Length: 282
Image (cartoon, rainbow, N blue to C red; front, side):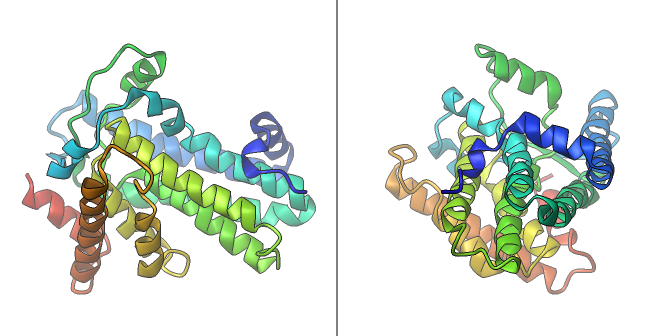
């Protein structure tokens, strides 16, 4: 029986990537993209206030989601989450898995560059509690100035992980064989999305913006029907938010996502609906 994706060794994966010239080059490109489009741009804006407009993007329904520090470990798993998928592909397919793994790494580089097309024009933030009772929250506050909320790269990354995995196993004729692993990875994406809302790293508006961005990025892998399905799994087994609030949260996310898609039909660029939303809340 094939092991779960979660059991792929992070250390093994990094070593395999470093040892293969093409994968190593893709990994370096990805690190550069993340550093430039996320950390450098964000810290530049933090050190030079006023350089780029910053908009608050909280939603009233965010208050229905309690701040739950215990979710921080799951939230911080979003990077190991997609790296483990590479390990699974290399462990399972060996040489055959190198091409798909390479494409997947390069797609992550492109995700950060895509999101930066919004960040360079208008940054965004939410009301994040300054919670310092846990070492991981100290890391979050130290490493993330919290100025890149729309679109949420966290949500974009986890969506790309499960949709790319589905496309890869389908192309290799292994959809049935790896159905349990696909369900595992998709549920992982849902859980991480819930976690980032529980730790108040994002608003539900940020989730809707991320869904829209992923449809723009690769509509074949993330069409509106897939966005509906993904959102339908959020907060389905929780007491807080309540079932009633959970229903309202899911409806609000889809409503905002649909509005972005509708506005995109007459827009000059994919990012214009997001920028228009940010300007309307300035």
